[in-house]
Length: 207
Image (cartoon, rainbow, N blue to C red; front, side, top):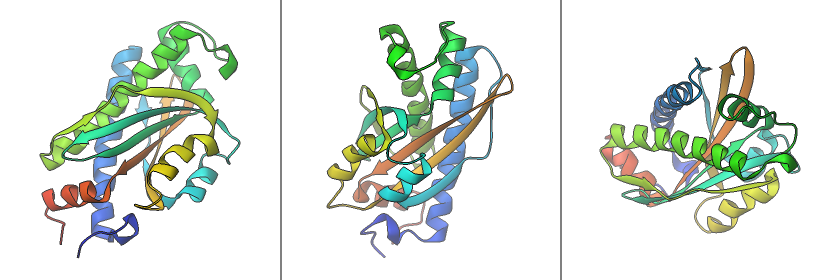
């Protein structure tokens, strides 16, 4: 059966997406450990297909202030990927890499922003590489753009772009542990529906 919307995914197909997320999260934790030069542990990620309003609530509500790092996907799979980083994650990264404390988003200087963006870039590559390795597809990501804004405003970008495609997105929630400090990040994986069909076909789970 052809996919018209993310809501058409069956449980086996969702399990395949969870496996891609599991491998991507593991790769991301390894990349973080290498960057920070310290062990970073990661819990089993939570991967769900949700509508935008539900995603907003999972992030702490539409007024929750977050760092959003947006990528475009191209190649065999087109679409968007967005990293949403909470304050604790930004603190973990900045404290370890540049030795600066992170008390508020208004205090981010250009070096801080560049550091966070580079971490997001490396982690996005971890997920895309996992997807490409499992499917054999060619997937590229763009240079990232980063914004600090409320969750509702950050989510409006993919919501408007995909308004006629799908009202649901794939949400991956990661919980990291570094030096006994907990930090979370969320990844929105939003391939266009034809790209999603290519992923499923390559895994033998298509129509």
